[in-house]
Image (tube, rainbow, N blue to C red; front, side, top):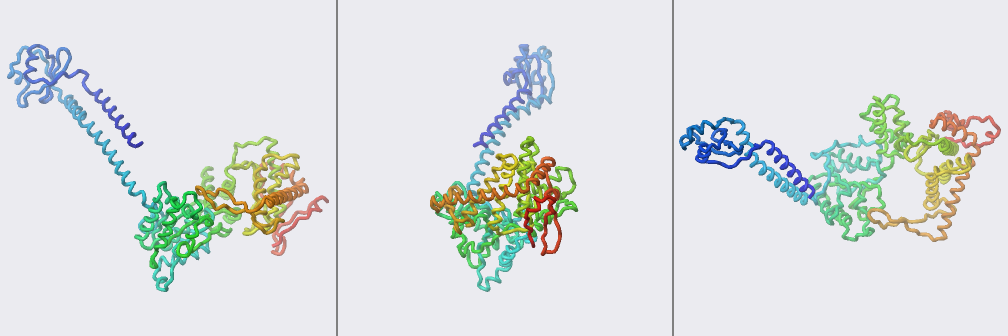
Length: 637
């Protein structure tokens, strides 16, 4: 409808413009009528004709009263001879001016022709556009149930295919998928042995670890067509469209022969049935039923493989995970330090990197980063270098990009008052000191009161070793570090500010997980609370409470005790290190940012290199008796 109105307005404006052009070029005098030669002779004899303009056989007659008329002469005779033959008075004819103006009359004839043809052409164009739109709408109606899968590889390649060499890390996942690649290359070898290759391969892992990339690498290694579609592309407003698209997708892949069908974000259509609000006629459930039926319809010699990716395997329907459908589950973890270094090398290709770039240091500073996060870090560093008109990417650009990805860009317009700057400095100094003396093996790499993102200041502490599991004491230390900023404000200013709100929320959440999920409290090895499986519009409504009010009161009491103990521990350290707290805070107020080397010099910590049986860090011997009584635990490796 909008397109129709738009076309109508365009045609209306074109007609107005043409009418204006005609009004400009049309003669100002009014044409009376078309005269015959007899009438023209009569007018000449009466002395009414002032001038005759001859253009070929066409005559333009101008009267004495400045009106005009049109006539035509005989083709093979001159005008004067024709008029004499019809009895014109020669004396009156001599008084009439005769002029030949062929060009002007040709222009007038051309305008006359345009005035007839142009409206016909415009109306024809108008109706042609209407018919074209109606035809396109009809074709779209027929294509509505077609799958919108993107085809990669083989003849339908739209992007450069990748192989396992282009995917860093994920060693175990690659080894698991080699069997799928071998089957796609040599299906007869397995069929002769009576083996049934897994029909469905489910890639499970956090966002950004490379699930889609790994699936494309399988297609690249096996050199087969790769049909990629998102789970959300099945679901439409009308019931049955998703099921039709699923049928079309599997039928198209069957025509292609040996191929891979990849469904990204499978949880969009694969959630457990019976937990929604729509019942059996729900569009999502019908789509899921059709996918299940299609995967059951594979013959033994069928060479299609269905691959899918999700980061929510807990919500998938059990029918999807049974043998014969997605019976192969491959877990993809976040990359470790070695894998991160390899991923960084891949993303650095094609970028002018400086000779001082140390990707190992970058890998050490990015624990918990996924492959997508690391790609973003390299891209941000390249953008930063280009913004500064550099010709190469330097190490300082890479380090700054890590902070930008973690916390956001610097907010230079966020200017603190003198009092607020002092509060922020003591707050961050409290975090840094607590982290430094609770985790001696995990150095504090940077302390800053320059605002980034939502944070007015930040302390970066990166572990030297990656851990998959944590103990209760480590959780308590983390809580104490979170509450150290709160405690520093309380010790220095005898009151607290809103700057510690985020720290308090994170410490409280951690305390609740210690009690309710990890069984690390006095309540014993019991977990409390269950997730409600009821889903509405793709979101969990609430959690299920599986404990009494009396137990809930004990949980609240235990959480409060953990938080209070952590706050007291942080306050104890900061009181003991009050001189260092003042020293670090004053340096922050002056410089705003303190790097690792300067921070360790301020607190009296130095790095030493000894044998593996000796401590890797030690405290420089203090000069006062008060500091000599402090016991610092040294980690041995």
